Amino acid sequence: MTADLADYFIKYGKIVDLIIIRAKGTAQAGDSAKITYADAAISDKIIKCRHIIKGKHVSHSPNFHIPT
Image 1 (cartoon, rainbow, N blue to C red):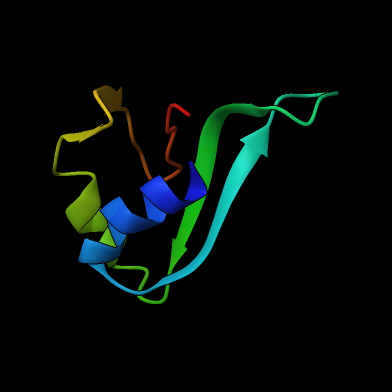
Image 2 (image 1 turned 180 degrees about the vertical axis):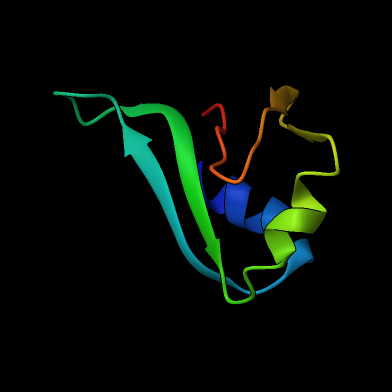
C-alpha cells in the first residue's frame, strides 16, 4: 500500500515521509496514513482535489485520512 500511495501522491511534489498508521496492537495496516512533503504548501493543492486510489475514495484534511 505504501508504494500505491507514493506513486499516486508524488505527482503533487517531493514526498519526504509516508507513514502507514498501523492498527493498534497489531502489525496490520490501519485505515490512515500520513504524508509529509518537502513543500508544506502542497497540502493546499491536495485538499482541493478529490482522490480515488484503487477504487477507494480518500478523505483528506491537513491531516490526511487515507483508506488502506
